[in-house]
Image (cartoon, rainbow, N blue to C red):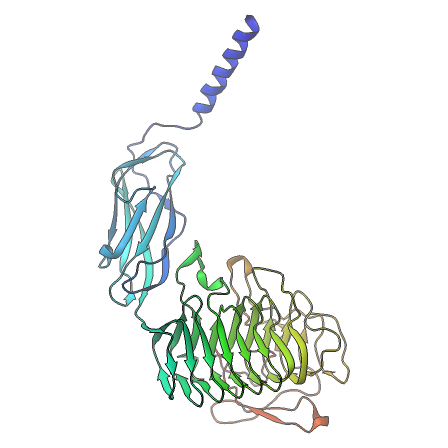
Length: 457
């Protein structure tokens, strides 16, 4: 029997020691609680709708337990804040054990647009710990399957359900400062001979994006998620003309039908769950100062179509899968890229891709020939990316090699009033001279006398 007594004694001693590691006693001393974030962020929310829920963790840093005696929301918009505290929608005093934590879920429902005025206030032993709440209520016009048989203009915040269609021969204009918030499954279709126009500015850009607001987790905004809405389809002989337009997080970005045209200046097309831009036979793309980035498939996919890129940035750090294609894919009818950055962790283009590249930067190894003129090879452009925080910023570090003038075909800068007039001639043998007015990038940063490669100054 003695061995059994020894075993029981040892087990009892072990349990006693383990129970002593966690104190159930309460302190009456003031304790300042800590939070999992410095601000409870709810992002953009729709007026009159309950926002997505944000999760907050509240920590007791003391070695002893504390009693949370009060949880309240203060501020002019306090009545619009909804809380769930440690699993309960109603609050009664509760204990937080030493070095332990509780969860608080929060959402808002605001009746008028603007920034929320509210803060979360918790009280322990007379000590108040306060956390600001951040949200912006957006009031939007709602359109369901709108069809524009005649030319029209949209402005402000517009929420789209279903398919937005521009009728044959009609023109839809997006005024500066407009945001189209596309619901899941929504899309934009341009009928034959129709057009979509957006001549915006860096101060008042136009954005087409998914309407899902809030955060995926903690401080990660939902905009990192691709495939939130269908995308833009241009039927045959239709056209897209835009300045300072952003097309974000579609299922498939922009699809150009046969003989369709797209002219994009200082635009951004980003984060597609398939290809970013597809070009059908006879279609054409002219892009200057544009960022094309993040796609599960190719950034630009050609089927006997044409494209001309000047000072564009093409990069792919797609989050949700290894991209299934090179940045440039397919068979172009004509292709020219000048003073552009074409950079990817994987292959940027396959051998034999038909086109001419003048003064372009590549991440892959290569060498100049008649199709690649004065290019930088195996070079890191030093983007200002931080993928650990989901920061997809393709502006250049001050020390970036893309800021250096390269080759004999340097970009010339004239003395045009208010800025520079860039005269670019990447292929002198073809006798082409293209004149682009890029006084700033899409952020409004002025171009230096010798502009860098890529979309950003």
